[in-house]
Image (cartoon, rainbow, N blue to C red; front, side):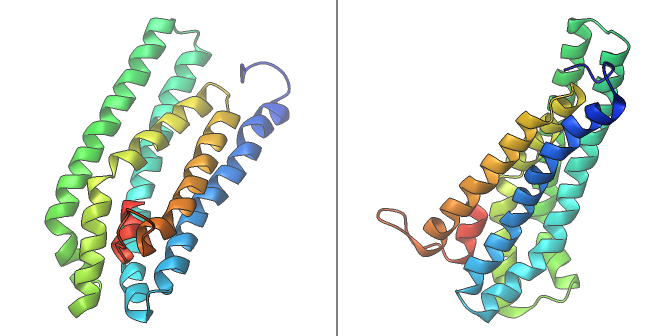
Length: 198
């Protein structure tokens, strides 16, 4: 869909209305984590609460990367750039997302303990929160790359596909959360860390 064609109000609506459901679905992941981990006890719930500010900071960085990629690509599309030029932008943005993911993983694994300690976590709460975030940082690319990709899809005027991807990811996460947290069949009980694996 060309964002430069048709009424402006309709073009905006086609992009942002589907995204509302996608964003709400992603926010539900944090609620799901808190709900299931809360069933393990107050100490585990306290531990996971320390991870939320760190996770939200990293999500904000990913959204910033997505917004930048979306801006560059949408301006190229609006200027009738060639398909090759648009492909270069997409490839470059995806490559940057991978590099940012690697940097976030390395820095996170090195410094997450001291960061959580500065936030006031201590004892078993610090240990559990650190372990949770170490697992989370190991898979941070699965957050950053899809967020960047969603931004580029929106730049083309497609608001539905990113919303479906975000909602699908959230539904899958919420469905497998209890499986990894409490265990099921051959999958062992991983406790709080199961939420990070999911």
